[in-house]
Image 1 (cartoon, rainbow, N blue to C red):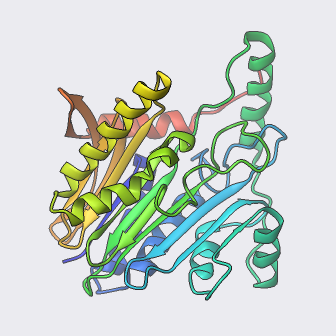
Image 2: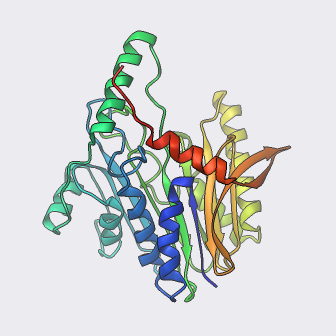
Length: 318
């Protein structure tokens, strides 16, 4: 049994690439890296990789994380600039004995010394988004933090190895050097092949307060199904944040256990995810909340077409 689950509809094409590897008894690490690279390389997804939205200084700073559930080895980079496919750099770091998490200039130096491909990651489309947001903020005093989605995935192969990984450009108009949950092990991602894996997307500052990916895996170890673990972790953190500080940011998660069973939960409406396994072709679902429970609704072709139309429609300077 193999399986893979990922946050957001933008992961579908990547999941289809991963499926080709997994159904040929390929390695889950290879599959998840291939899937995330597919998202990173598509410039119309403005929250990951090439075409990602810049920080407040107009620079695209990227974060990524990777964890091997067999060895518990981790690799992560934060605030790296001008290198394509940060997930590949993060995976390489997971093979190092030490120095597994690098940020800023250290991450850039490591990538350069190890021959990774340099690339200007700021596209003309992202520049227009940046220009428009500056104008909106000046005229309407809008908050800058919006328009961000992390791609996170959990993958199981036929040798029962579980891996988890993430990639993101983070919050639009974030402070230079800001890092959210995505490259933080236990918050943005976690994998243990003896149990399963989980990954998160949303407001990183709040997700880190609950170490939510580790919490989901811990709940699965205690016997909860992936769906039960996702719902309990999301509801507990959402409630705690509202009690302690009066509000909670977006919290969305997906998980898969060592049996290939999966789950997804969110405290918002409209969170989508993609899942595939040997008996289930790559499929997009939308999470609907009802009485504290999360229902998975199949995305219609009309919904999928509208999703892509919105992301690829022309944009102009305001």
